[in-house]
Image (cartoon, rainbow, N blue to C red; front, side):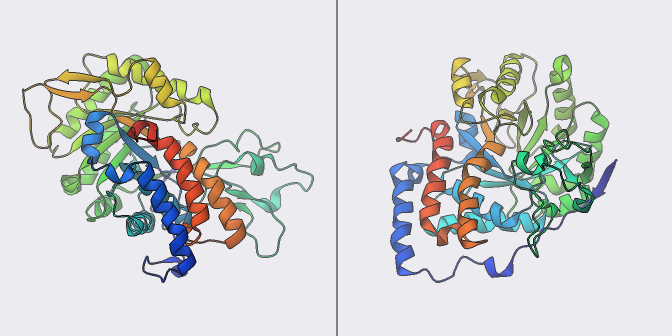
Length: 412
């Protein structure tokens, strides 16, 4: 059953602000962070997010449409802002947006680099990205081997018996990957799905610190998409980008994309993007996970009758995705089109644009940096990563290894 509701994440008031005093030792350590950023040429990246899409060098960090751990989101946003991403995609919740903004501004306080766009994600109907796992930990048999706890990539399940420890699903950390459902030997785990409220989303889009929205759709019921689009009303008029995330639905994919484009076209004062969701929430599994995203991109890029808009990969994207795009000659390969991507402009003059605008990284991006965040939290509790620059350097190195090949930094 799908529920319609608005989530409210909380932020520890002790962790707010970017103007805390920095110790002398931390200042020295932060110089190492600055040197890593400078050495990779991130500071030289003055390309706007729109220009990145045109060049095929766009990189988006997906925090997760259901991931609401604001401390992790703040730190992830800081790290990937320093790595030079073009966009940070997060849950449609005011507290989560605040956390992203705080991470961005904390990064820019270290070095005045370009600010990424902030995108919020909504859904028009039931969707894998908008669900949570739920179970009663007191109902678990004592002899259970706890496979759910071991398989969860978000560390969102805890069955600890420590005094004061939260047991069961840590709701703010669960992002709906579903890997715990089939492994429970007693079939105790339930799936709770929800739909973001269109009216609440419309109000959030009017904030000056929200630049874009992404609509997740199955593509199988165009009426749901139109209903959500109408519900957002004129709130989209102030946005820089509207993205539509859809799975591969075979021969119907292009015709459905055209129908959705027709629904949006009348009040299109923004850039539009199609997120090709090959294998949702699987990038952290391994090399094979990216194949479906690549195959989806190959088919859509070759379609002659696809609607206007940039194409971007997601779902199964990881460190092997760029190699896959190169293999199929889709990495930063340009095409000449008579359709302009300029806002409020329908030019008939040819323009050169990349076939694939870029790549969004979700589970894999969070995993490689999350290992370091977990290590830091084990030592220091919930903390700002810039207060522990040795961890920030490690996290930034991981992020740059992922972002660098697409951004074509000198060190990559």
